[in-house]
Image (cartoon, helix red, strand yellow):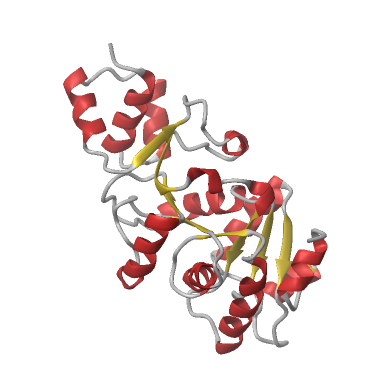
Length: 257
């Protein structure tokens, strides 16, 4: 008899983590597989796994939009603690100002809070690397398969997080980073913490997807102010009620650290 968690892994591998397809197969009570098919799928996984049926599945994710059926990870799962983490998002093509201020702010907050990001170019990878450089901890949430480093240029950072921090994805093995995966990835970045810092991004930035999930969750949103008349998403959010911050100390003071 096939175990429930193994069936979820089989469906996840078969449909490359696509939530809608997995849900549809469950809803249809799809039985077009054998126990050997399930075993083969489970054995194909190199990473550690946690499923929606497991007792140690992160409680906070049960409340998010489309809770992942399976999470694949390397590293320390206990780093998932929304009260001791902050999500950091921003532009892939960050400005010198955005880069400098991200380093300055993250180098301070990473001494008290785990930094959650998406390992993308720009602000994400900069935040993760800065946290590591100051001896802090970081969680990288991938929009690709857990064994697929994207972008390739972040291979060294990917390996460091995999070994000493937490690398996590709802996409198995070498699933390619399809465009549709990243908005789904963003909900996990938001839900892994109770606060979010947006360092930079235009008013059409993909970071707004993560911000919207953070607001849905009830998280605090902090933004770095930018020069006027530059189509700044941060300035737009500040006008709408986000907290303006110019230093890491301001974020820590907000939480009485």
